[in-house]
Image (cartoon, rainbow, N blue to C red):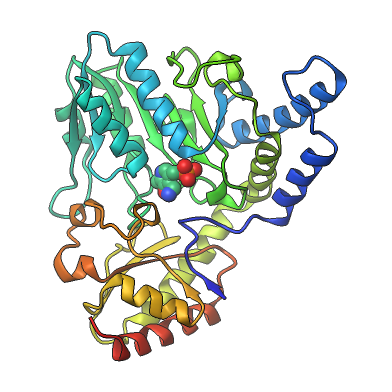
Amino acid sequence: MIYLDNAATTKPCSEAVNAAIEAMTDNFGNPSSLHKAGLNAQLAMDKARKIIADSLGAAADNILFTSGATESNNLALRGASAAYGKKRRKIVASAVEHASVDETLSDLESKGFEVVRVSPREDRRFYAEDFVNACDENTVLLTMMYVNNETGYILPVKEVFTAVKRRFKDIITHTDCVQAYMKLPVKANSFNADLISLSGHKIHGVKGIGALYVKKGVRLIPVVTGGKQEKGIRSGTESVPAICAFGAAVEKLQPTISERFEKVSGLKKRLIELISTIDGVEVNSVDDASPYVVNISAAGKRSEIMLHYLESREIYVSSGSACSKGQQSGVPAQFGITGKRADSALRISMTADTTEAELEAFAEALRDGIANVRG
Ligand code: PMP
């Protein structure tokens, strides 16, 4: 099998699997229990928390564990708007957010918040000025992802947050860094971010674990209430095995971020070279997008049909966002990908372990598919 759908999920690395097994066999206690079995589980969890905090240049105290980035995004947006949004009723967001942000914003909108979604300009880029202009004294929250999951576009989070905070220091800033974490450097302070969402399964950890970085002093009203785990902000017994796997994956990947970036940039270049020889194929991702996600359009052939053709050759890619289950999201249109180009969009997402031979096999299958499938 040739797996080119790493933006949907990644294969857990052996370090993550082993850490999860160890947590399930040796450290299976409840981290809130007062006895030694509980303490051992807590120590294992604390180790992972510190590794993740260090990677962000933060303190362990700043990291809350959740069930995944969907929950992290919900907690960030709902928790901050509940804590700070009594009087300030406006939320500003990019118009290309993942459903876990966008749907949450729509819900907050139905509950009385005004949500302003800022689009990229005609050159498909976002400008700090547009976000500053969208914000005002009534704005409680600004949310903006770092790397777009459908196109790989890198959003200027640091520039936007810095410019907005300069004008409106009380606005809470949140960034969904799921597709950037462990691929590009993500640093809490230099981003001027109050809240950062992360996911374990996109970085070779296991599914069902996420984290939310919360800057010291930033208050959140809990979404999930109960036993007051995670500093009382996210109740529920922590998934120690998934947390340990998350920590092990970060420990493994953190030292090689730039090395892997270079390698995957080379792979992206090769992929574009290969597919540019196929009639009608267009590359939708810009050169300075994250090399890990490449969005292309397959000569007007419907994504789903091409996807299944490729699947018949044991090559796995995605059409648009995997989370939308075949439903087209509005995000490609924001980047100027419309009509047939959007209907035939495919997302190829790689890791540093992807090989040129795999890309060659993909390009060959794509060429055959375009020649042979209808629609
Ligand atoms: N944000 C982005 C940008 C994503 O790509 C995803 C996963 N598709 C999520 C949030 C949700 O992450 P999780 O699967 O951990 O809930």
